[in-house]
Length: 420
Image 1 (cartoon, helix red, strand yellow):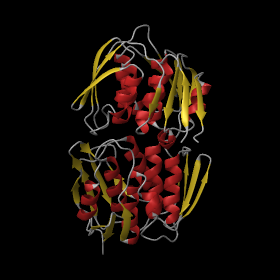
Image 2: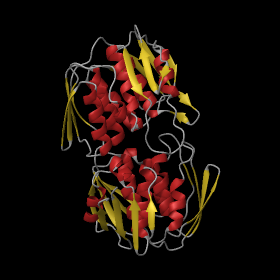
Image 3: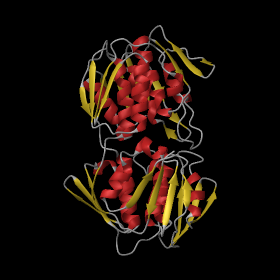
Image 4: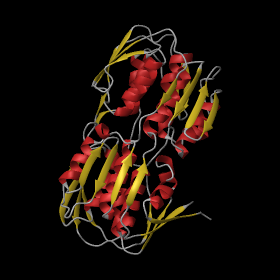
């Protein structure tokens, strides 16, 4: 497995182009299964998860062409089940359930895997499909869904930790070809849900209310092909913003959506980071003096759980005590112990991490446990004295396009070390 060797202590300066959103691309690729016509998806990031999803869709019988920045899918003839070995490795693969059920009225999907960040059950996905009229037994590790017809219903999708993004996506996709009207209550409001809804509407769906807690879908007979460009990745943008502040540099985020980053930029400003918007460019630079802040993760438009680990890395560098509370996923503090190897002072108390910041970090070998933890360790390594080796960076390749190349363009001393 590849590693990332970081020689820290160099501020980041320059421009970084923000790639297309991973969390938009994957469900939009799945949504292409809803039509027999060709769909062309642009601004697609070069990520291992995207290639996984392309392989999954191809295993269903669709024609899939992956080019730099673009994926073309034509699902003229598809089958209701795909490659188990592919699907089980990526949690995002569950989003093929809704399109298959809508298009074929049956689906056989293996229970998915993904990052180890706590329990992420798919019970709300299954609840939504059952409400639409599907029978869904679980057999031998497979979700086996069958429906003679899908009928629009009012469906409550709230969970213990708030709305489910992929669950909302799945039900919304299935409902596009259902009979009658479906109303999703307690729907996820994330920009990626809005992007998917807009893509579906461009295909001929009738969806209103995306971006609010109530989404209404009027079923149609069929959908058609379309060309689409996914939104920029707000989590990637937030990661580079935090990295600029942590390294003491100044970075221009090119192509990011400021309206998708409000919770992050507001917290960075509270911490003393200077964030300014100049047209389509977001400029981020470290202020003269940073201060500790408390962070609580929440569903959108609150502070995103996918930026919690990166913010923890920044708080380790700031004098004082800060508390980061995780309200979305349990077990999402696995990076804290690895940061401790760099000299960070972090203690975990239930859903909260207490950080006593301000001590200099020093390089050490660390192990990445999930996608965002990997990004946090990279940020810490950029700020540490000496060399930091981040192992198992295949997690990074799942969600950050060419992260080592982009960091080098910003002046970082970063080298990818091939695995043996």
